[in-house]
Length: 238
Image 1 (cartoon, rainbow, N blue to C red):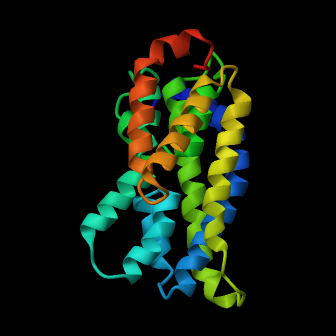
Image 2: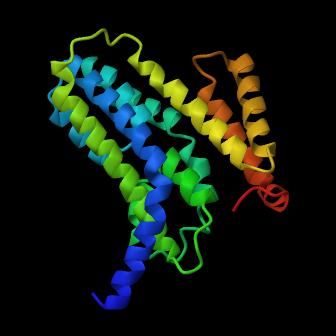
């Protein structure tokens, strides 16, 4: 590796790391919570460690605890995963242009695109002297590492901490509310957020609380796809 290449990578890491510091605190807490939850549910520490490394979808990993404890039903697992992570359809559409010309890093960027990495890579003002592909790579890699470390620590030490774990799964709705509010504050045009809330509420009233997720995701995908160009012109951050 040439000196210039090392400097390029080093500048990208230095630029990316400060953006991920808030995620470090959040992911360590959530990851430890998940690891403890897995451990008190009867799983060895390597379950949360390997699942956080290979799945890297916090909400799905929490849900997977009940799936692993229940009867074997791969179709149910597939349906739940699609419903929970359907929002990544919108992330992927939003990042189509940004992931162009990233070379081999594109594969990892796609795999590791969680809510927090998407939020940073989509809205960050990357300095002109920093390679954008390496910046997004390090944001994704660092966030991934934080989650794996937190889940592993929770799995290792969860059995040593005797306390009532009831309500630990509340961190999921709390996390999504915080992510939505953070994105709302960063946007100058709230049209997409309002559309998402309105369509979700409409589907909730139409299909009920147990069946509204997939219809609402499909409706949001269709509407935002149709309105993509007007929304981009309206001032959504790029």
